[in-house]
Length: 175
Image (cartoon, rainbow, N blue to C red; front, side):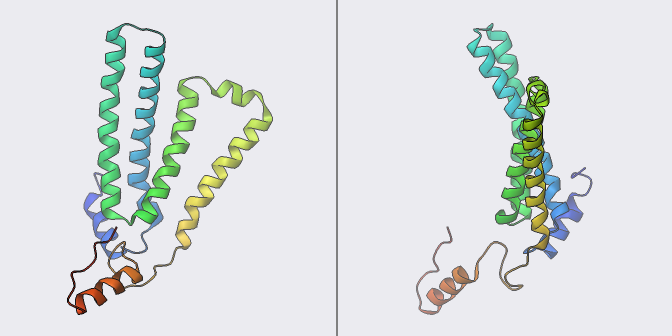
């Protein structure tokens, strides 16, 4: 889906560099988180097979299956960091990755049966998911700190760089 709207997402991200639309930030976050979820499942499978002393062919097969989603994850992670401020993109991506890894991993390894057997754990899991969704939703109320500063730069770092440049010293490297 992101491939279809790649140019329009990039244009919108440039227009709203300091205060991006959260729904647009979710696109690369969900793609990277979904691929990361599959990577985590495949890595756990490699670990289970190694512990069970499985034949090398099975271990190799799962190890190869790790590579494709890992490459997709890195692609969308880099794309999200390229388009959006890291203070917005990384928390959303991390929340999506944790949520998807937990849900899909529980289904794949059939760990959900224990969760569904006890109402207390169901309520706690639902509460955790609600907190994650609420946290992501709070980004919609985010206000940019100023409209003239470049993407990701704070006022204090820009002021230090301007003062150092005026004094004839090289501008400090942001880090």
